[in-house]
Image (cartoon, rainbow over all chains, first blue to last red; front, side, top):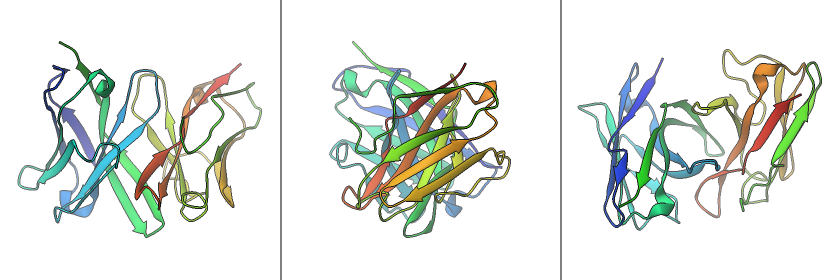
Length: 121
Length: 110
């Protein structure tokens, strides 16, 4: 059973860079795509982007200019960096495994418990 | 406002059958498979239905999914109090070249 655990600062100042790490256990990081998803308090889910073990990435166009997702296969970790944050980036951030079985069939399989990041001075 | 439209709320009494709809377009639901996620209060979302109508191991067969054209539905039969949660549909969008989520439906068991 794959398990994911997010970690990182719970408070980030406006205009700074949000940095989170997700540690993967119970499975090979080379077996999946890996993704970040966020959820503002009391609101719905927003896909941020994904990375494959080859290093290829795909980002939500609305965040693309500010996002970097990367993998450290030696540590079984994926990371998220979101620059120039504002209060609108306050959310619970989840990492998840992303299964692509066919070109039209994709889904998020295992999820971390999520970590709340607040953007405030 | 999400490109995938879900009713904000739904309700039912124990034992009833309820359905939750998810409406999209040809660039998303019309050409790709739909997934449903259940989010119990204070917890992370959990995969409930994938590829329109497939249940992961451990998900009761009270939950079922279907898709027709540019719309999809989640049905819950034999409603139980522990089904009270938020439900989200999600699908790949060819125009966005990324994943879209519906706005979510809060299910209340009366």
